[in-house]
Structures are given as C-alpha cells and as structure tokens.
View 1 (cartoon, rainbow, N blue to C red):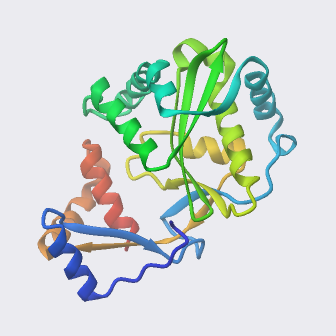
View 2 (spheres, helix red, strand yellow; view 1 turned 180 degrees about the horizontal axis):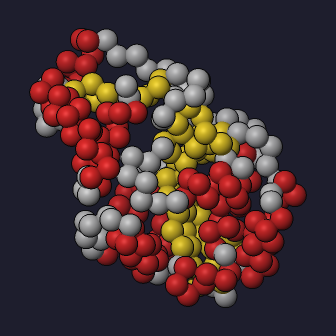
Length: 252
C-alpha cells in the first residue's frame, strides 16, 4: 500500500530485473503524504457523512439511494446480472478518450472477475428493480480500501446517478470500519483518459496525498531515449508513449 515505505538498494534492483527478465523498468513511490510534488495518490481519510457533501452532490446521492439499492454483492451476481454489458458501456467512453486497445471478450472478462473474487476482493452493486446497473470492486488490505474500479450504465440510467450512490456507499462503509486508515483511488493517472479522480475530489472531498515517484531503468539508453522524447510531449498522440514520458518527468 502507498503508505508503506520502500527503499530499494542497487542489489535489490538487480535482483528484480534478474527475476523479471522481460521488465525494463521498476516503478515505485515513497514519502507518502509528504511535500507537494507532481505525483500523488487520491485518498479520503477524513470523517465522512452525507451532510458534509456539497448540496448538489448530496441531492444526487439521495436520488440514487431512494430509487436504487446499493449493497455488497458477489462476483457471480455481477457476471450473471449483466456486468459485462456495463463494462462495454464504460469501455466506449475510454475509447473516445484515446484508449485504442480492444475490450476483453466476455470469457476473459468473467475470468478476471472470478480471479479477483478468489483473491478476496469485495464486490458492490447498484440495483434498480432487481437489475444491476453499476458495480464496484474493492481490495481491503492493511486498513486501506483500494477502489480498484467501478463501472456504471450511464446510457440507460444516468438520471439515477448510480456512480454517486455507489461511491458514497463504499466510502461510508470502509471509513466506518475501526481499522480503516483511508480509502484509496490509485495514483495520479499517467494517461488522464478519465475524470474519475477529479470527480472524487470535487464531489466527495477526496484529496491528494503527494509522494515521490521513483523510476529505475534496466538500460540507461532507454532512459536517454525517453528523456529526449519528453521534449516533444505536446506533440505525442500515443497514450502509451505519453504515459512513459510523464512517468519519467514526474520522477525527476
């Protein structure tokens, strides 16, 4: 988890590259919740209640909770309840923001869902009249609720505000646990293809926990190439290449 201190020695770096022969860089972060930097995690660690939300957000949450049931569910209920169709709807939005890889087949998607369930990850669902319209996956470990993903059917149920009800219910539940340190929504996006993190900050009071990004390259030549390409960041069209450039720049 981000708050755990990591400091790799040269010997440990070499050992990792030896073990993972196809890998050509190591990425990790330290100095969690430290001084301002260009790299951060999005977290919620303050008291949380519906009364503390902005008025507009509070109304949207209430509309969802009035018309929908938001509760813990199972992987099989997500698989059999139309979760793949919800995944495809979300994927169309990512595609419009430059993610050009094809979506997973239903079989591979279902395999991933069952695999995460077998690892102990927790599932949440938003239901209206018994129909699944949104789902979320959370990994609760070492007092940290990692919001791995959540996906909603915005095409057909936008006015029920499923994302508002889902985020609210998950955040309230985990922050209410005695051993919960914070709720986490990952690190700053290298591709910025989604507005999820800004949504959490603006609507639900999540904040930035700054950290120091560390990058170790297997080959100095690769680092030199990325450093050169970074000079032309504004012209880069490939999100994958842009991610590596930003990763390099934010670690400097």
